[in-house]
Length: 303
Image 1 (cartoon, one colour):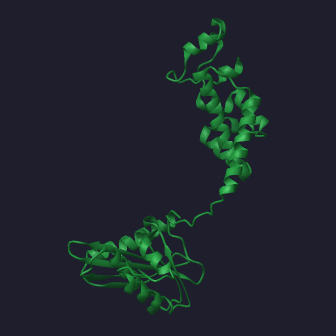
Image 2 (tube, one colour):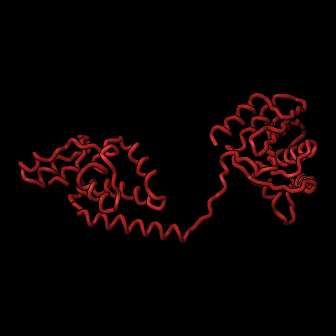
Image 3 (tube, one colour):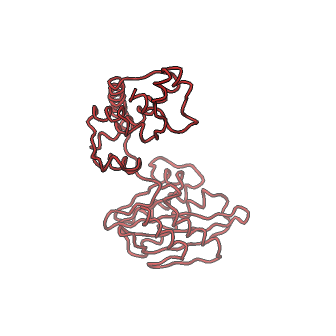
């Protein structure tokens, strides 16, 4: 009776009184307390507590009175990293067990639920170990360079109607410091991809003038980066530009071409947008326009 009582929620839209009184005698139904919260179902009820105990999870009284979010944070922080999946599975299984009782009138035993949780966890870990996908480099935010390297982020602003483009680029080091920035405007640009390839060239031309020898160039144009990384013959319309870019890059002691998602290239995008507003070239040493400075600060604060 006590376990069944603990699996019923307070929410009247979820609590099925007809099920209770069709399953139990009237006096038993009256004893079932329908004032329990969802936190009670997955943590505080005797059924849930015994499940957690069987799985070797224990906490003090001070932890038991925490709100659900604080309790879950505490549980994650005080459990081994290889058990965090089991914690999530247990919460899901407890909630699923409650719904199974309410909607299907099927009551699982503690042993059945613990066996299910352990079995599901083993299956999950087995599948994960088979897949073993490598952790991808975080493409969605700007990441500082290794020591003694600088990173050139480039982007382009393009107006098809005017066939006008602006190349925006910004250079930062491993300490997040802006070493230089600028934009160049150019006309008679027929396509976005040509503009994206042109800005790579402009970024690489600016870096050696400042004395940098180890550079990473990042762009959010996957096509341009793929062509720059490839050793195969390039027959696309950007071939002359990528050929010149590779030739320029060989003048550095070390260099890499890398793709970054738009979210990780927001500062260079701000430079390109600023360039579209003007019709002349601008360059800064250890500085940048206000909009780009704000984006660079945001990159650091939310990294």
